[in-house]
Length: 405
View 1 (tube, rainbow, N blue to C red):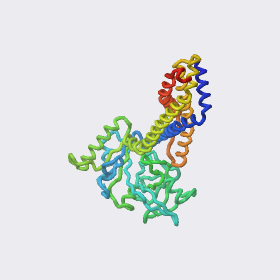
View 2: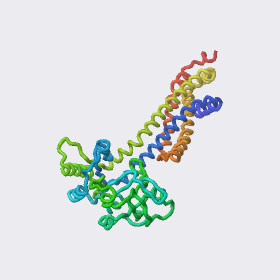
View 3: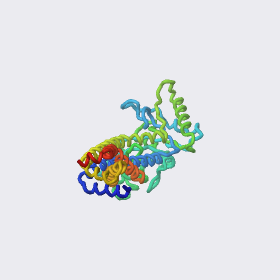
View 4: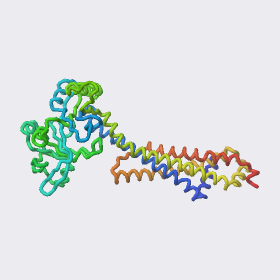
């Protein structure tokens, strides 16, 4: 029997038993939908991670007060780390030749911001003029913090796009006076939008003031929350990180065995953190896709066994008129593969639609590629071959005399 005839006979049988074909397809469709969404979300998360690493800077390091986590969180609840200072920042810049520039900063979360009857909360940052260069983060309108603002402890601020929207809508806020806590500030500029942070927070929901003003007029502190460091090159970044660690331990007089009271964060650490955040959801989807595909394969195999039992006379007739064992086996294998392949194609389409819905409703990053489509097609085909193998063997072993009785 020619290959073309085998294929045509297989397709006729699938069309003849529509309900059976549909039941075999449905499990595969669900599995491929989940698989397509897994790949789309996974690629989207990977692209997002790389975008966030670029925002952090491939030639950058961060020193955060406190130890025990990637973001330099304090060692115990309520403990305020006060050992990281402006002097530390200047010392590192002077002693380590690979450092191009530094941007020391301090911060206060959930600060109350008000403008007449409107109010909101935002992250309050104390920053220096070098922030714009080190973070590649300037203003879209107005002026950035200057050395004069630092020296004079000026009560000026830069607001993020989210804060602007909350307090002013589309109106121009430059020159307006807002209340930060109990202190009045004049808006000097609007920060360029930065979107999400490596941890998934809103980087636009923040207000920036001169670091000197933050430390003396707002928080009354003499220590820093962190230091962003820009290097001359990304080469040797791990060596520079070790130098920073050694110098800060020496300056903070930490004896051997005493934990660091700071954390040095590299782009690699930022990547790990962002991937960890996205990993849990992706793992859930991978398990869902795997279970669905296995279930779909079992369903296909069982229905194919039923089909073999119901079509014994047809198999015997084909063998009686010249079809050999290989022809019968190929026909049943093609039937199972064709069903799962069609289910796979439907699943890919529905999976792409589902990924788009996730993106629109939950704002999850997605990326649909030819690679994900190819994986869906190959996976469904392999499932079809595996699921159809044993039923095809059983059909091929049937003897014409027995089937035609």
